[in-house]
Image (cartoon, rainbow, N blue to C red; front, side):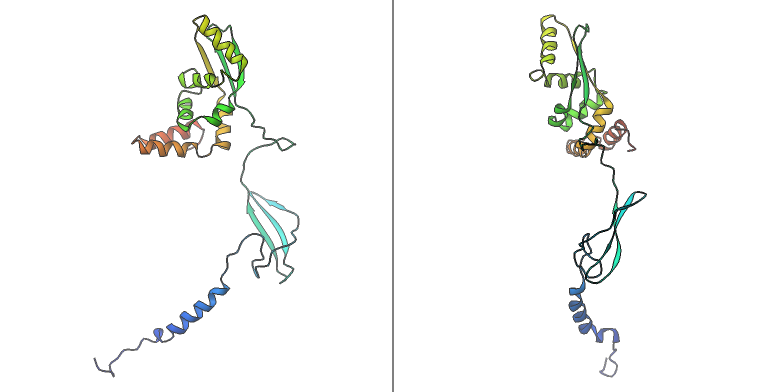
Length: 214
């Protein structure tokens, strides 16, 4: 191919200039974030009254520097309930334990067990239907040395060769888990995956037990 036959590509002529313009233009690229004017980037000092619209909320504002007026939007996500004092109303997990002859029956809060036990133990408790089996027995045993009434129950059972049962309130347990241990099921799936278990079946079972679609 001779010089005369050389093919010119006009689109490449200004490549160097275009790259330079792009490089210089990078200084105008910035991330838009809450609390800053989307036009000039100046921190927003004053907001109007919050307005709610379906599952979103916005704050009207006017930028003091450039004069831009707009709305700063947020999505609303349910996180739970509190009383008028701001205290969490999901403050206990009701449970009961009794001797097989029903001579001793106690009600107690199982929350500390849920705080300190492992995901595997929670899984076992859930699989047992939240009571009437060995995983629930462990809940009662956890409180033997910290709950006087529980100690009396165990002393009675040992001295009279009597068995016992423990049951945890399902609704309290599920609500507490969702709020305080949201990674519970994901952590279990990770453990079971490592052990080569049927993860899909496990996840569906847990999702159903917590009242959700798998």
